[in-house]
Amino acid sequence: MAAVRTLRKLSQGVQQQVCALHTSVPRQEAVVISGRKLARQIREESRVDVEKWVLAGNRRPRLSVILVGDDPASHSYVLNKTRAASDVGISSETILKPSDISEEELLDLIYKLNADHHVDGLLVQLPLPEHIDERAICNAVSPTKDVDGFHVVNVGRMCLDQSTMLPATPWGVWEIIKRTGIPTIGKNVVVAGRSKNVGMPIAMLLHTDGRHERPGGDATVTISHRYTPKNQLRQHTQIADIIVAAAGIPNLITADMIKEGAAVIDVGINRIQDPITGKSRLVGDVDFEGVRQKAGFITPVPGGVGPMTVAMLMKNTVKAAKNVLRFPPERIRMAAVS
Image (tube, rainbow, N blue to C red; front, side, top):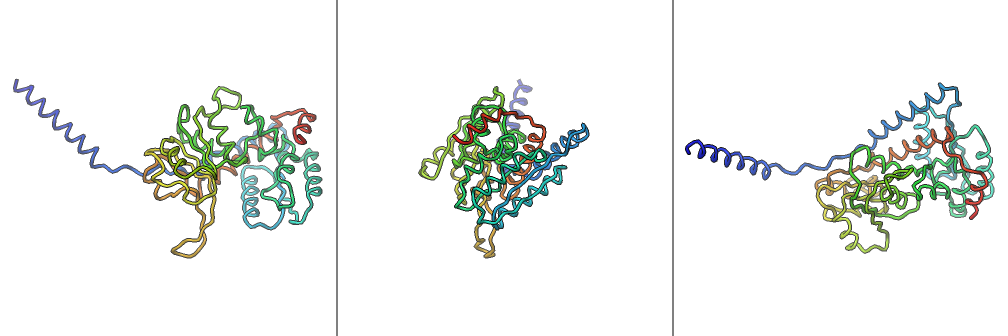
């Protein structure tokens, strides 16, 4: 009996120590996902693919970028893309055009590059001047060269879970989630933002069937937009396992809106004036400092989704060079004009 009493005392002591451990250790902050680190891995993969392709006797992949106007942000983005191309062994060119170029002149240039067999990937940097129809321009780029993934054929194939050129930013978000090991099957996801180039494709990638040709995330996805009342958005985000903020609204997602341990992917890029320094700085759609105290994973701005966008663009350029996607020309023409 004495031995039993001794064992009971020891067991109670261990339980008290475990309880004390759980109550005394504060919760750790979220894991900050480095988009730069993941982008370096992906660019290294592209670099290896390019060298294998060239060593096999093929021409080095080539990317052509059309840049219209003098917008500083657009010039910066294009410079990042061409530098990344050089880094992975892709040759590139930037074709500068004035902001007063006509839509017809721009279309003629695109058709010329479509027909140039030395050009593998082609993108037109957005946004374009107001007098130019962006949808007409995106549909003018050959789907097999459409490294932005904006052509109606590529968008349609993505929605049907078929292999295609995926839009670079949504694909970057998908790779962040996959490579970080964040589970998606059966999980609740909120995508804040419904843009056709970012929000909608992200939702498509996350909710579609993982058994299909282009595997999806098998998640239950809710999309919010500018007309979603803030209190309703909060109701959705508070039960979400993953939140993707892509609305372009600073501090849209705050700590009180998420559940503990959620993964928060910030796609927003907003330039605001720092109240302390008075200087402008980049922020996302998420209150980073507040949310990181409660989330399980979070991406920073800058240094999160941005570098991944450029990395996935390189992946698409390699895919275009290998001519993986072969669409009948007559179907491409029909889809572009419909």
